[in-house]
Image (spheres, each protein chain N blue to C red):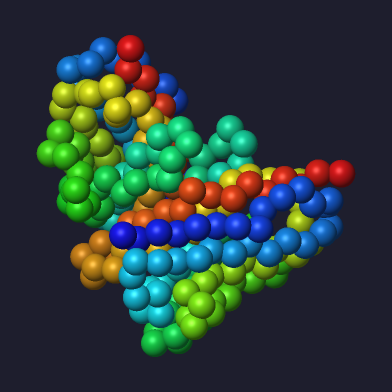
Length: 105
Length: 124
């Protein structure tokens, strides 16, 4: 299953709302997660099974979607949210999307 | 605190071999399914393979690009995970992350802890 994330880069100001997209080549039902990867750090699990926040993840991160189209929303961006965000499916083995880089200026 | 620390990366020629290690702490390692995920320069994340806990059979599975060339093993007495990479190709170059499958049934098959990564460069 191929996961396509678009666009490749998004730029925002602090406090703005970000909406990131992940599209699957075939249905993954609700078996999709989102990760945050800051430069020089280990990736961090944000959301699993579309909309469940992982332990310690702030409420400003939320996920939605089903089947082939998914969205990660960051309601009010903070400077530390600058990172690359990846989606990952577990419906058919494991694959990741190509990532969306979020820049905050 | 859960920690995963990789080691063993470096420069190797095409066709060569390399073994990565991952030392785990802060959780019951022998109960955990573990995995390796890599990232080629300028590219996204790619799942490499996994090993189940011995309780669940201890078997391993691999992504198609590395099947037959890479093996994963574990030494539960040392809380350690290994990735043996043989017949390396230039396209195997990247940062290799040791990851833990989420321990909760609700988030299984996602990765809740990652190491900092170990750089492998395959070049002549």
